[in-house]
Amino acid sequence: MEAILENEYLRLKVKDQGGSMTSIFDKMKNEECLYQPLTNSWQGQDIFIFPFIARLKDGYYLHNGKKYEFKNHGLIRYMTGDMLSENKRIIVSFKSNSETIERYPFNFEANIIYELIENEIKITYEIINKSNEILPFELGAHPAFLVPGRLVNEYFELKGNTITIDKKRKLIQMELEKTGSFIKGERILKESNVIEVNRELFLKENTLILKASDINEFELNKINGSKITVKKGDAPFVAIWSDKAWGNYICIEPWFGLPDYLDANREITEKPYMNFVDVGSKFIYSYIIKVN
Image (cartoon, rainbow, N blue to C red; front, top):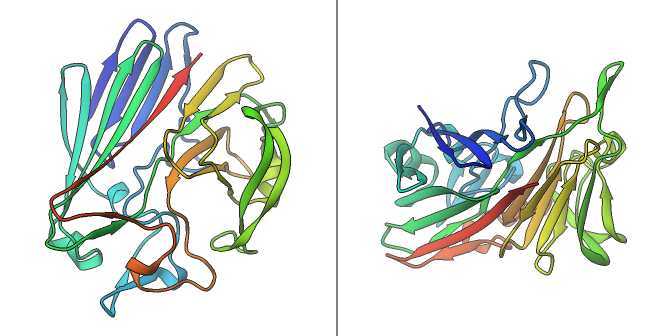
């Protein structure tokens, strides 16, 4: 099932599978802004990441000593939610069930809410703890923005597209080990307010993960003159990713959490940057995508 929100600036499409966006259409420029999957590239477009970001070391974690296995980027991407479209909002709601409990032994409700405000999309996540114990989780967004470029032999050249931030500063990178899956530490990437998003970047960095607590906005400047601004709110990390071969897109992903470290602690409650919701309480996070 798919729902549509529309105003004079934008037309947004959202599906109940994973609660993810399938189209952001700029009516002012008559152009699509969200990646539309190519047959020989990534088949996603957007992911509601919960309750783990990226990969767990050896594919499992422990809770109270019990082992639980997990796929990449969590549960919600594989679930179909209950969709409600009302009062100029789209809400997609996901609830724990017997299958989720086998892999994540907590009762929860996870909602994603979409609103259009002129040329901006406000996206809000609600994580509600319905267990009788504290609920540990990670949370992330994963929108893929369509970018112009050109085909060169066997890859798509992104050169010329850039991401800028508010001011020049030392950019701190959470460095991945050689497989590009797990954190091995952190380092200074460079001192700048510009990130060149091209094939060379993604050949070098499988995913560029930046500490972003003091950065408010990431602006994607396309070579055709269009811009997408991600106002990332309180998220402490932002990941930047694209397919190093056929990806005519750039993902700008606000994250509350990280992939596992190489020397990962298996116990879920002892993992670094884990978030917690008290019994009966709610965690709320919003970020904004501005199209201009």
